Image (cartoon, rainbow, N blue to C red; front, side):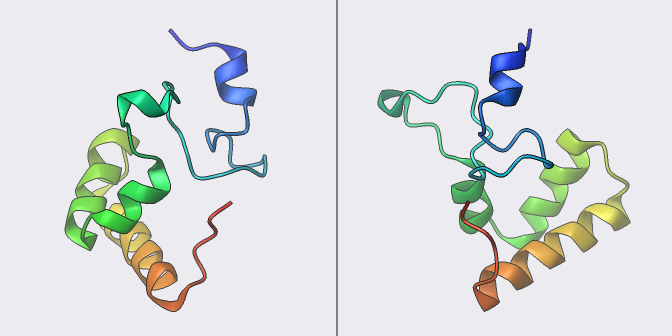
Length: 82
């Protein structure tokens, strides 16, 4: 399950709260799980779009537009790191 401390912990689960693009439930560095920011910086646009579509439930066209916007923000340095 999910609990309020996970959502309110400032790890990027709630877009209305300022926090890092983390989104990990397990933040133990020993487990080597990458943050959402690291994932977005590592994958190509197509993989990001498929991930948004599959796990975010977005329509394929919407997922591609989101992935395009993220890729553009990464390229021009405007993707927030916090």
